[in-house]
Image: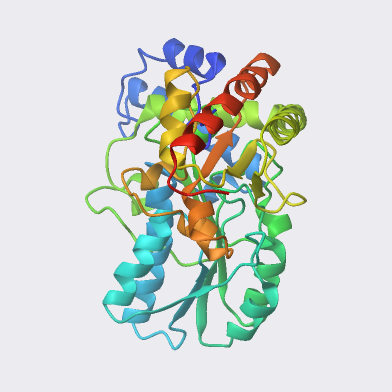
Length: 381
């Protein structure tokens, strides 16, 4: 139950990749093997574009959303260095570490980057964003759905505010792709980031959407690939796998959403009924269907995770990219959650291959684990 960290490769995706294992030609070569590989890459580009309502020529393949996110921010940095009168970037306090760390990097070098706050449910406060905006803002970046709480952000509304001041709009849509409809035109996006492995595709491949006419600077030099923006031999098999994952995601979006929401609610109701004094985090009205973040007062999240792991149940205490840190989740703290509650939070993230039986196993096993951990805790409810 840690599908926000990564998903299992779908059998259909794996089969398509196996079927193309002999497609070893360099997609940049002009001979027949190269043309065959290039055809696979371009087929996938069309599928990814279709998934988000974009044009195929607006998709750039990357290694994943972290690279895509960094590329957008680096482009804005380059524009500022070139003398742009717009020199401020606004993002939020709850973005993925690939943006939070990039912000820290830029701020350390004197660039103007600010973070808009969220409310107690972890949702962007639009009035605060509006107050921060003026004609000096070059970019606004707001994630579509949060990786820890599942809270869906008001991206379309934020985009309208950004565009009213002549700023470009970016969204890290990694967690939302395949779970809810994501259309760059409906949301008003100029840039969008995604990773294949979050929607049952292979790891190490992702995409950056760049609306036609929006600036983007080359981020890997040395070749003509991706219009001269990202040099290097194509990861043909990975890209084809991403294309098939995108095709499946577009085809199954409503069925996927409904199943994940049903399982999430089954889990939430079961835990609320069987464990006293728990706190469900995030916005329960605007929420990704498979994400459930719960705090267990007087219980350490790391202890809960390890006991669950011994029972064969895999969860997270937050973002996989922050694993190794003993600090409480900055996402939960940004919404005003008490530090001790943040320390005792567990993220359940359900996926396509979870079942009612999986949920019922957690409901059966977790109450005893919480009772044990609380009995050993130095804190009391």
